[in-house]
Image: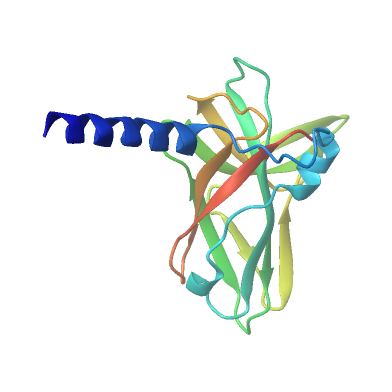
Length: 174
């Protein structure tokens, strides 16, 4: 019996070690460029939970330097429905950031200012909202984790008239 338990233990350790080790492709030793990672990294979205005509794409979180206290996230929301869609807020777990806000940018004299869209944002029927650098975007504040390239983090988009959508978003160098 002791021999059987020992064999099972060894098998379990070997299996776990194989599952936890990084996957390496044997046919290529070339490392893709950072630009390749940014182009290839895509968010994981369960489209079956989205209302017909509403799609999310191009979601990404900007990689930040070690010790950064804020970060930014971006996503494109296509509203091909007959109704306006209200994105009320965005959230992440507290082990990622303490606070998440939807922001916009505007010129104030010679200075670009960033401000919170406290009521969220409306995506009119048959239109697209691009949360992107230099425009409306998502701010991650009070970072509790490093936003290092290659990570993927869960982010939840909350809508007034539709179920919240949790997506797995890649962290990319931009």
